[in-house]
Length: 624
Image (cartoon, rainbow, N blue to C red; front, side, top):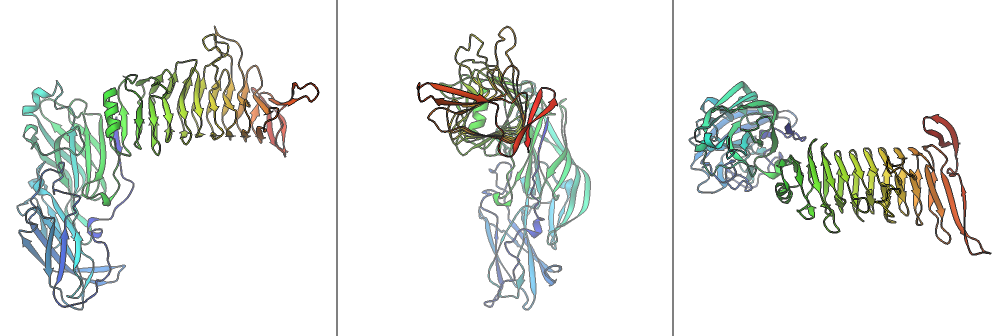
């Protein structure tokens, strides 16, 4: 499977985004204009193969333009160019230059810096020219930086600061399998060559941000993998660098191929996102599995230039998973690639804003850890579950203290007498968009806030099962006065029951809720699609949905227990296989005994029962 992570924020061309202001500088004294030219300190070295190798930037050039026209339609006229050899001495990231400008006119200055011996990239009169034939993979000395000053008036302006950024996109290839048994014998003679097709250019007019002279097919010479400098590291931990190239391109998509010798298949990647001043990292087990790779595009120079996009981290066993979770950054995607057993890991704290992906066919076996779930979503953390694979456990797969978003997949539990697949603790939140949960006891235990938009949640727990005894459970249980459940869709199924609301707040807008007897040989009774009671002070609002109980009431509502506050039912809509049951328990003043009186459910004011013929559904609640 190919993974593409493409930025959604468009950035301006490098020549138009380098300065902090386009305001005209005020004149305050005589003398030339002094420019402080900076390479950002966030790039502690000027290389990008990791950040260990220093490219010895020593050449600073500039081109001066007169600015006429209007602010909306400026006209730039080239005046002259100059340079400073031996710039940025030592490890300095700052160079100061003084430039004489004529008075009474407005100017902009384009700056350019690189290694003086860089034969592949040249800067002439404000324009960058790239000779791809002279370029080679993994060559730090081909790097370059550029910036455009603010508009300056006269020759006596205040000192100006310009910050250099890279005019290139950078393409990096990394692999994790150089030490694989089928690869290691070939590493001594292994070569890798990069071919790029698409929006490549050989010329950039920096001040206008315009590209010219497109190249449609560029091949960089093969490099010997064993000769790659040990200090040249791939930007993603756990992967070895194979090739790095600088590309003159705007925000575009390219086609690229990494070709090997020694009989290894080429890695062919289409629609690869590239962006000026960004790194595009392609990585995976490229030699042993060239069809499965990740593509991540990240700011290649300074974190303020944009948003970092997440990486997908593979995990094939319990140790790799726990390490991936521990080392993850917010936004990362952790892909569980093979079956794994987490029963011996202890409770795993999910304390980063990450996504866990379990592909179809992969089963993650979990186990209750004392009184904790195998996975615990920490406070102030959002974890998203994706994929069509399965989490299979005894009970308590996920405890939620932060926010859990379920977008797919399956969960199953096997313990009939206790536990829940997902427990939402006080302060926790669950958003269930899709997926399937099948529990032997409770599927969803709620003491926090839950929204169900789709999917299916079910419990097979039956009071007729001798292994259950008195430990029966509904599929979904609101177990706190602070519990809030809103259902906008999906399906909830049970035997003992589908939903129980003793004392929380439940709003049902849509969905399908039903109960049936357990299959043979257990059989026996089933109970209610919705049960309201067992406590007091609950609030339930039914605006829609379908409710079916095979052998009993669709909804059983204990309105009041003697001496306690009412449970409230606002019945505004829905379809039902019968009119349910409403019960009030009171104390007979003469005998002191509890007396129960019952009736059909009573719709809210302004609503009524209406007979229908819709399969199993015989009644609906509608407005009068």
